[in-house]
Amino acid sequence: MTSSVLRPWRIWLPRACYLLIVIGMGMQIVPTFVAGEPWEFYEGIVNAMLLALVLLSVLGVFFPLLLLPVLFWEILWKAAWIVSVAVPMARGDGMDEDTLNNLYACALALIFVVAMPWRYILEMFKRTTV
Image 1 (spheres, helix red, strand yellow):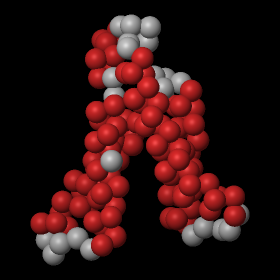
Image 2: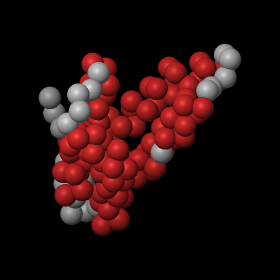
Image 3: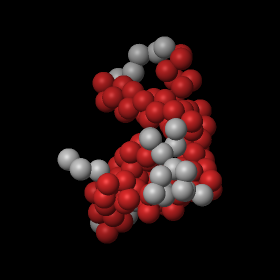
Image 4: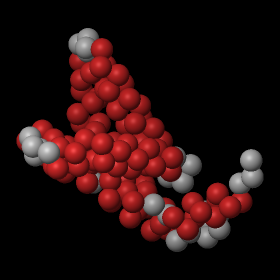
């Protein structure tokens, strides 16, 4: 199965996800980067990684199938955060407002899970030899 066999909407769904990242995260990260104010150490690491995500997502808008690993990364880090942070907090004393807000933001990864062209991905893995 190649991209020519994929129906156009199976290519446009990931493209829409990249665009969501570019707009949603770009509106937050790009202005802080352009402002040029120094970041604290860990804030700088997080913001630099988010800026890289935004820039790669710009490429994903134009090359949606080639940049599917970016969407994988987005799905996986959000799932890891939910399992390692949100669930233990919910089981314990409960979640504060910031954690709950981040949980809602991470739940957006479900859109990415639905948008992934899974059959195409599995075919590519089957074809690829190491």
